Length: 381
Image (cartoon, rainbow, N blue to C red; front, side, top):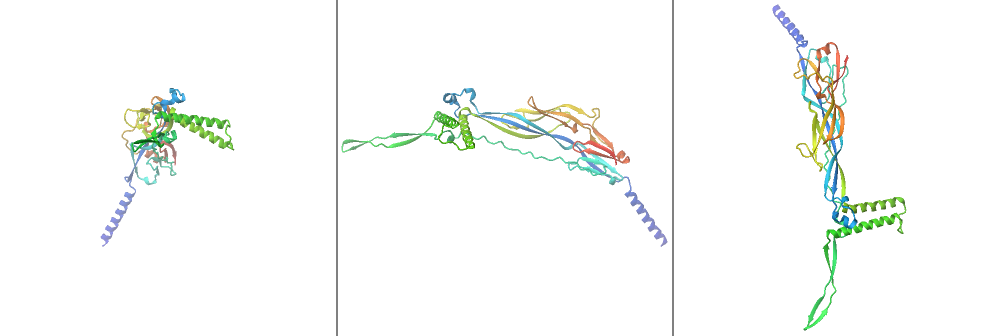
């Protein structure tokens, strides 16, 4: 019985010692993964589109109104040019820069801070670092409005047809004697007007509008508006109608704005990147060789440490970070420079490393700029 009690006590002591050894063992660890960021450039392009619309009476402009042919739009066409460009950087995960960090021993005492996007924000910091998150913007794609015809028939002339009246004469015979009986019946016929006749009507209405505007400006009416505001509105409306009738002969110009946003990945080593192509109709193309190219060229590239190489196969227990690279992004519309901006491109920089063992032993904390992966500060806890 005594031997049995001694055996039970020894077994219990061995289990407690083994349990304490497992609890305090330095072999127990946790693996933490994270990615360094890379910057994607959102390029918002605004096209200024000009539509040249031919008037229905363009061929009669010189004949009826003495307008020179050089002032008349003869063919309907359009042209586009880049008017504005906006550049905005946005951080995304760099799948080629994914790292693992193994925490051994008293890793539960360490404090790690991440962003919602998975970027490392701080290591072993005293206070929980809460970085400002980048706002995600939704880009709306609006379809271009269809070109409305401002030359309806009801606007051009009062009537698109003319009425021709004819008199009929009927002859009746009665008992071999001819009696001439005339019946004046008015029979109306509607005949569509020719394009030249419509043009003459439009020119006539144009002269009438000019005459009315001239008479009201010279106070040549018996009854005039009582207040200045009504007077201005009448003159403004008459001028507007006059311009619309004039556009029937000279044509008109329509101006539109078209916006599109493209995301461009600035890969390391590529100093020229095609954003998109567009044509005179305002359509964009991501592929192909047709249309005018919009491209980004890099210049004035500044490296923090040009001689430092990127770690290809990281090993050991380290924290990896980016070294900043500054570059000027020049946006060209064909060969014309339309915009430029200086930005940080973290994926172009080398990757440095910090030993976690040294940070822990010396009780150091590190904070990062999550959107770039660069070091913000290192301090003692």
